Length: 270
Image (cartoon, rainbow, N blue to C red; front, top):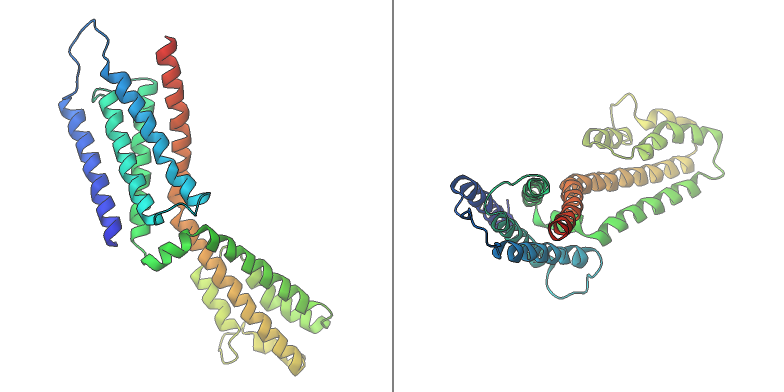
């Protein structure tokens, strides 16, 4: 992993270890008393504030790219604020698991922490240049735009072609551009299929004898574009793999914010 991912991983693991110690020793357990525990609402509001502050990273990443500071530093701050949220939540709960909504919020907080750790590790295991590129929303949009453009070019080149050319197209080009999530094996298979020197029995040159030299050149131009589409879609596949953890991280965050609002409402209503 890269240095940044290692540091954030160690910081997260330290927070998890501290939480385990607190749960075992109960150092914040309050003594029985009839007096209201004033520190619990204080830490409750601090916890809510930290949760809201952590959302600034989402706004910075997706909506406000012109905000100052590198995105990497914003991510590190997001992790630190998230860990402070976890600590504050433990202080608010007195170091115990609690029950009902409190238990649910604590469990979801732990799940968010673990999915965040999943994201740090998965992003830290691949080269930094690839991570930066695949996380860039502009790059993500550009990938799909490139696919749409190449597909239009192939469609335009197909217009007015002979039935023989269309047969070769449907046999060799169409299957390649129809795969929305190609594997590395499929990508390599089509690369060998388009190789004029390939010994593959499915190689395209076996069917090109019925085409004119001009149509053969057009076919190989299409084949290059089909390989480009496979390459781009492989990049999109890496994007999906890199961001799988976000589905859980964002989903759990949405649920926990709703649960926190329910907890606040119930606390002041009852």
